[in-house]
Image 1 (tube, helix red, strand yellow):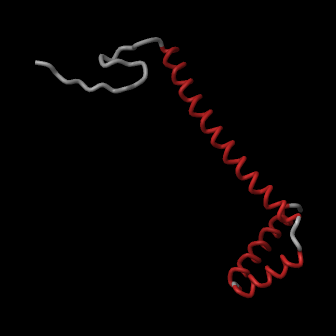
Image 2 (cartoon, one colour):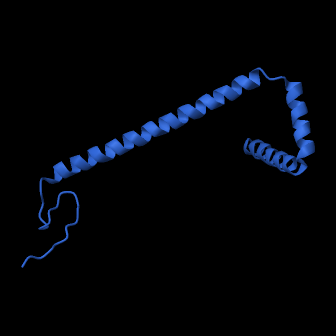
Image 3 (cartoon, rainbow, N blue to C red):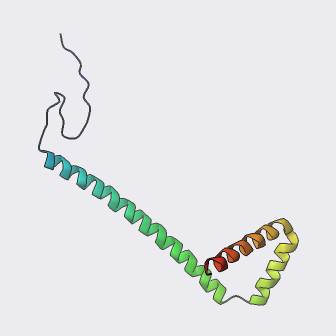
Length: 105
């Protein structure tokens, strides 16, 4: 008769519960695994930030070439079409400016 035993896959343990390998070997393997995961996450973060920086750069270029009179006219048209949203946006902007100025005192 044979008994089926379940094994937990903990690093450095065998089915009999003993140590397989040294503790430093296990710690080194875990450190390498986590180092790889951290490296991958850092690479993804770098790519994300690079994409966002390019979008911001494009927006800045658009603003440098923009006609401010045209932008003001577009803002007026938006306000006429969406008065509720325009009111909320202006209130939020006023609150933000108020908090910034209050923090300087």
